[in-house]
Image: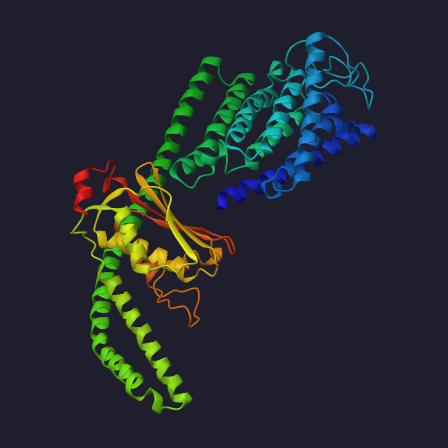
Length: 539
């Protein structure tokens, strides 16, 4: 989907930005450039360990993108980067709790003890260490393409985003406790807040088809509503809160007036937005109903057209049988009484005529059969598929090199017996026709699946290439046009029509050289779970 691709592009761009920002900060430490370490002398500097961790997060995010998911080396490097970030954050976390110094704070660069808003030189903030631990675990889980790990990764990003947002809002409103944190902790740098927000967004957007993002990126109404309401939910309270604080600081109004103003403004803005959203949803719903109406009209029309075509095909093919019968009688008479009087070329042409007339007769019979499948299933009764299976075997008479077996007892199905007979007959005959092995094996099987019976006809024949899977169920479509294989191109189309007539579906599983399995389903309401003797005696 278009939304998914957009999210993935944004995630990749953010991963590059995170990597570059971390690299710039690290350059600032390497060459001792204050402006690259801190935006102002009054603000805390981003620590060297923090910069290195952001470089690793950016690299891990870039390597974890969906288009590199199949690259084993990329996955290993991404997980290694995430582990280093986890280890750094984890050790820093315990340094704060235990009051120890593991020697990792100034391992590469030394920071003066007089550094602003810094509890220990070179040490990242306490809340920074917590966020690094959470995000690194989320990144590690992102590399595993499973539903559970996808949800866990996205759920971990949420608390990391909340902690980051608190610090970011603290900078916006001048609420120092939100970003300075506890008294024993270094403050979180403003650019650290921004990079963490980018990291959280990039983690979520890396897998938009999975986890929590699956519903957000959806083209359904839920996804559309969420994507449109989220910016309003985020920015309106931030702007109104900022106006309240500014008004109180400049003494334009009191705290009580500011709270009243914010509450009223929130109600007005949100109500207005909800109204606009309802208008948008009403338009979408109107388009959906219009599309459904047009689809319904088209399907009536198609049904009528199909009925007319079916009637025409029946009449046309029926009328063709009379002249074809005359040609067939003439061909047989020529072969019987005058075959020896023709030269070699004439005998060959007469043989071809007989063969073509036989093929045309088969085609006409198949089209007549296809066009006369009745959609109302008027003559249904309980049919024992074991008896029907034996009748099919007697009909197709498989050669001695092909063994056809049923793995288990088949159920009793309420149907027009001729319909299901045709399904098995066509599928088995098709398997026999294309079997080119001396040890051919064809197996019939059935299994219960929820509200359906699933039947399968499997063979160890030449197999079918995937690009032909849909084509072979279309009318007059064949996979082999050689003269030695008589195939009208109607049989599988007939099978599909019958199966769908009963509310089932048909599909195949095959690979060249590895055989083919045709599967079809019939609803259980057309089948008897037990096998009463009275029914068996009828057959």
